[in-house]
Image (cartoon, rainbow, N blue to C red):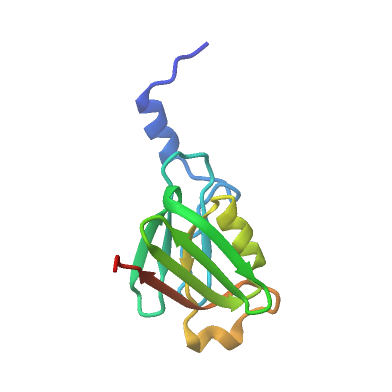
Length: 135
């Protein structure tokens, strides 16, 4: 039996990963949803809007998740008073990934690439983030 030390972990990280272990790099042309590959206790969901602005919110503060297939809208409500609305097409798989805390980064499709998307794939046309204030 061999003990494993921190050096071994660093050495393991420098080894080339197989195709199934490689993390996906964000695409610049279209929508991509990066996923967590391991269990973690502190996860965030990052939203990347068309103008490049990003907002990361903790899954721990997600209080409500709704999906309306007729309107093709996902609504996320947080206890931090943030409301995120995602509009697009074929959003059911994305809803499932958010519900199971798998999705890590959600990137909005650049309008110039919307016509090149494959039918049946998730397509995000708009991400709207509101912060509700006490009145």
